[in-house]
Each structure stands twice: as C-alpha cells, then as structure tokens.
Length: 283
Length: 331
Image (tube, rainbow over all chains, first blue to last red; front, side, top):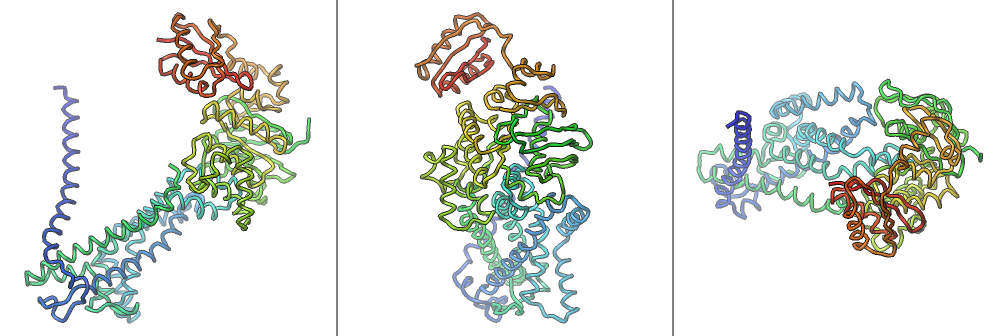
C-alpha cells in the first residue's frame, strides 16, 4: 500500500481510539456510580439530615448536604452570572474596542481558569481569617462565584462574538443604542449559548470540594441564614468515602448519584423553560 | 433636477490604509430612486454605509469629508448618530429578521423610540405589513418566529420594519441579490411605489435593475466616481468610456439568439418540456430564448435547465407578465 494511505489509516485509528476513550470513560464513570450507588440509595438519605454518628454507620441522611450544595451552587452561579454577563459584553469590540484593559481582563480570566480550586479556598480562608469570620454559606457562595466566573465569562464571550454582525447593523439602523441592541437583540440571539455557559459553570461549582472546604465549613444541619456554616455534597462524598466502614463508603456512591441527578435535572429544566425564547433564534 | 436630500462632499474612506472611496462628491435627489452601480469591490456598499455611519462597526476604517442630511453633518462626531439613523431605513443584502416574532420585528423600532400603547403598536404593525403586501400572508401567525418566513417574505418584512420607524430615506444594499425573480420583482415594485414619499438609494450590481428603477445614477469604479447624472442620460449616452463599457458588458448585445420559442399561456411543467424539446433540436453552443408568463416558470425553467447542464445566460423581465430566459446549450 502507498505510504500516504497507511498514514491516513493510522491517524484514523488513533482518532477513533481517542473517541472511544472519551465515551468509554463517561460510560464507565456513570456506570460505576449507578451500579454501586443505586442499591444503597434510600428515601431516608434524601429526606433526613445526618444524625450524630452518621459517618460511623448511624441513621439519617444527607439532606443537609443536598440543600447546602444547592444553596452554594445556585447562589454562586447567580452571583457569577451578574458579574460575567457584564464582563462578557464589555469584552466585545463595540464596547471596549480591543483596549489594553480588555486584553488584561481576558488574560486574568484565563489565569484564574487554570488556578486550582484549593487555591481559591486558601485565599478565601485567608481573607476570612483577616476579618475574623467563621466558615459560612455566604463565604462559600463568594468563593464559588470566583471559581465559576472565568469559565462562565469566557464561554459567554465566545458565544456573543458569534452573533452575526448583520443583526446588530439592523438594530443600529433602526436607531437603537448600543445598550438596546445588546439587551434586545444580541442577548436574545445568544441565549442558548449563554445558558450553556451558565450550566457548565454551575456543574463546576456544585462539584467542587476544595474551595468550599474551609470557607463554607461542614455541619449536619441545613443552614438557616447566610452566616451559618453548611454541608455540601462533594464534601459529604469525601467524608463518606473516608470512613473505614464499608456501608458508609457505599453511601458515598449513592450521594454521587444524587449529585449527578441534580446537575442533570437543572440542565434539563433550564433548557425546557428557555425553549419559549430560543425558537426565535436566527440560524 | 429636484431638491437635494443627501449632499456628499469630498468623502474619502480607507480600509487599513487602502483607499475604498476617493473624493466622492455628489448630491442625491429627494423623493427619487438613486442607483449606485459598479462592479464588485468598487466601494458601492462602503458609500452606502457612510450615509448611516454603520461603517463605524467595521474594523480599521477611517473616513473624511462631509455628508449633509437636512443640513446636519453626519460625519461630525457631535451629531447624534442614533437619531440620524432613525431617519434612514436599511434594506440589507441578505434578509435579516431579528430573533423575535413577526410582530416584534415590526414593533422593535417604534418601541425603542418610545411607543408604548398596545393599540398604537398594533396599528403600526398592520399598516406597514399591508404596505409591503405581507399582511394577508402573515396576519394569522404574527407571533410565530420571523425566521420561519420564506426568504422573499423575510425581505419584505425587513422593508416593513425599516419603514415602521418612519424614515425619510431608504438605503438598499443589493436588496434582491438573495431573492428569486418573483420576490425580487415584488421588492422592486414596492420601491417604485415608495419613491413617492421616500428618498431611496439602492446599491446594485444588476444593471437591468438600475434601469428599471433609477431616476438618478452614480457609477463607481475602483472607489472613484466616474459618472453620475439622471438615469436616462447615463444609460442612453454615457459620457465616460468606463460607464459605456460597464453598461454594454452586461447586455447580451453580442449574443446571437438562434431560436425563440413562446410558451405563453402554458404552465409548469409544459413550458419546461417545450423548452427542452426546442433545445434538443439545437446544436451544441447555440442559444435559445424562451418567453414565459407563468411566475413559477421564471424560477423553475432556469433551474431545470441548469440541472440539465445547460448555461442560463439571462433572465429578464420584459413587461408586466412576460419574462425572457436565454439558455445556451451545453453537454
């Protein structure tokens, strides 16, 4: 066979192989969790908070962690959203005009994106120590927002960039201002992409353990105020897996199933409710 | 010559240093159709975009000179460009509905200019959809996405949307180049109707369209204005050699028609079948002129002929009902 043909088939095999690794690992992760977690998943786990000695095999559930994680991730995502959307629009050429400030912002976001989450946690903890604060829901939310911010902003920025220039031209030619064009045309057209950005960031936020370990703390109760410390699913999984008792370890997998289900449910409901708006998109 | 509406004085434009418009000075008459003609890349669209300063959205562009509309210099940084743009409707090359419903597309302009009452907006939507002849086609689905309309309908919607902000001027950038012949004709008829109330500037590379529509013609060539004047003078007796060449070049003056068939009164697919038969009898390389009066045939016959591997030389409207299609036999 000709050498070029051989090359071609080698690369084809390599590509298929990498594809299989990706799909295989995804199925592997989901499969393992479901296989190990589903049998021990019980109503009690979902509806009860942890009783004393839960991690030593006593009764109760992880309702506190579920509620805590939802509070943390929803709060963090909401906070990050309000910051991101502004930054993402500002980074567009019409607003910042490719200035030094916008290039610096982009660079900072990329560096923040690559920063390990434990560093965010350590930073948050240092700030809290300085102000003599205790671990609390609000501190966790702020740290998670910082963690999600670069992911969300960069994703949104790319999406907004793809909005066709013709659409903006039409809006301007009708006498709209930049703000009107942005809010009424660009954000409508970019909506599905903006949502994807939010969902990716949410997924990252709800799954992160290291950044909230010191900032949000850990407790068995459901927080009732922003200044209470709170438990969270990733940390619940961490502590359960760390237990020497096999029946507690198994519950870690059940908790992972719950975490996965939450991410999936949020993703599906968001898309369902935004369908009303996305049908107008110009393709 | 009638009253001047847009006065262009010494306008120069550069794309990253390369001249795109060289010292253009011309006056565009009020309530007439002015056609800007010329080959691709000659600066037609650039000149149009200068008039509503959409050129600001283009990267690395610089411009100088003066454009006066109602005695306001729109190049002056102090001029409120948002309000100036309101005076000028834009009809783009590609129909560009906004990502919203048919109703909201029309209502968008009036709403941003402060119209709030529902019945006022309803009235405007109805008025302008009727004006462009779209009302009967869409009145039962005003809330469906504008992107679901056909391309021709979308372009009429865009025209209505531009008119809804009550401009004085309509700027058209090759408004029919993405449309089929029937939709193009529809838009052309609208423009002819509208010149009673509006100043219209149309950029076109279709010289026949310019002839059908224009009262005044500007010919640009490589960024230079080589000729301008009333349409009949420019088309019948061009002063500049380049204009003459451009007008002649796009005519099929030197194409010998070998056979003419008249399929008037026939409908699709019969006119197509007759044309095919006539073409079959001709030798390779010969040309056939087909006269049709069925609107479907205007698009379907050329399409079918191209699918058979023949070359469509031109599709021209002769009068209200008749069209001429010239085909060259290949293959």
